[in-house]
Length: 170
Image (cartoon, rainbow, N blue to C red; front, side, top):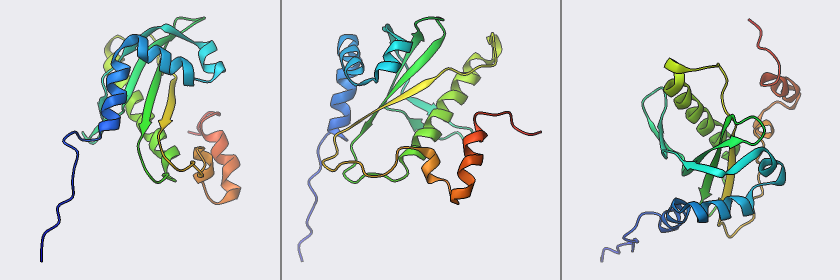
């Protein structure tokens, strides 16, 4: 019996690496982000001041989370900081859990930003992090990209809607 070895690329995730390299160049990053961001996001963000951020963040359990490419920017009218997270999806099969993955990653980034600014924070606010998902899947994404759609039972969805938009009960 012969042992068949699977042929692997010498570069781990070559498509990921290519996109990350493209986004290292400010001009490329601006072109890609400008081409794919929705109009209402472009109206809010100042894309002329993109600043690449670290791509690994640590959660409360000291686990590292890679976030592909994260850019800090500013809101046009207020100058407040905001972020654009470019998520590069290379999965062959769409992931039904994508909304939860996005939510968890944004929470980890927020927590790291909070810890970084805690000692000299001017306010107790968190910046908007807008996820821009770029996928090269050969299949169309057929699952919902809304976290609410993962909630069950159906009757709980109105309560979920209020969870992040109304004060919590204490």
